[in-house]
Length: 119
Image (cartoon, rainbow, N blue to C red; front, side, top):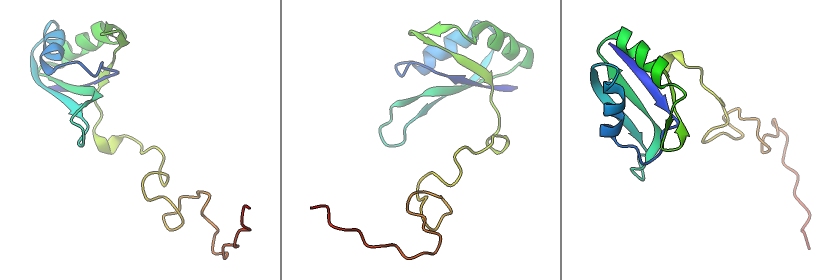
């Protein structure tokens, strides 16, 4: 069993389209399209689970870099969340004075000076 990451998908791609694309290279167990929680719209990537590792490797070799809907697909073996380095630590939501974000509001304990009025 091998889980594949499929990136740079056109937002109009359906699960059945993706399944048929990969079934040409072997048995597909599961297709998971990733959607935005708030809008329900595709986020442009998905995961395809294939039964046989050899077939999955062939699918990667055959489909990575090919075009679907005018976009070049990026396909590789999916990595578990814990193996991926976190990007942009400290600069996401809530980053500011107290989260060690180092943004423009970070005065490192010094009192903020009042500004002159602009007019």
